[in-house]
Length: 271
Image (cartoon, rainbow, N blue to C red; front, side, top):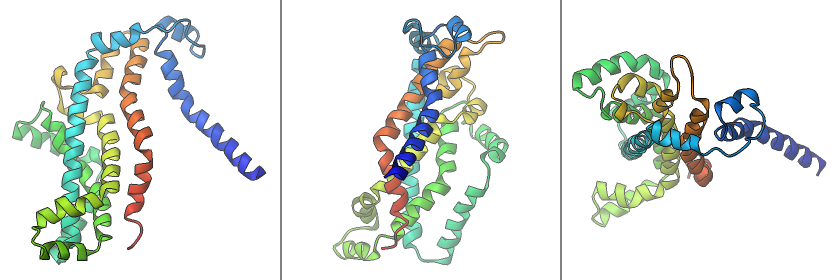
């Protein structure tokens, strides 16, 4: 009993230590720049909501927010669909070519994303996709495929192939078997892929900085740079913008955190 209380106390301290930067950022978002510099650790003298108005309207965060939601949802839905299709195909097609192709996809886990920036820039420029949302969506989907396929493949491997055969005998096509029967069975893993990819795409900054030049097409992460000038930075509005940026991630993680554990464990138990 005492040991359990000690462990609980240590975990509580760790949680408070982890949450402190987030709490400090939220409190600072209600201060003025002067208050932040004079008393950075004190509570706000008054809750100054004008920082959020400046971030949303003057900082053009309304446009950046729409861009981020659009790019993230399209990328995530494409990533879940294509990785699920590939995982299903690799788990059912028993051939040397299929196995080699799957291993080729997994090699993508060994390639750092920074290495591909220059060839990717050249490809996007030649295709006419530079400075468009396709310059972000296509690389996001392609870059997520190795880990996503690995998760989906492990899940489909644990679904008995007798289900496929029974459905085909009843007259179902391979597409109907995949879409109507097997894909619902992989929902925990698909939700995990959705969450992990959503967090990754939502927080991505480097591709936006390199492949997008038009301010109207930028996302929230790139929009944060608008509060940093050559000689000064509007820290109060910047903290407010950071809170706006983090809120969707926090909500999704709180609501769906149990799905991550279930999805990661779905392919770990052999049926």
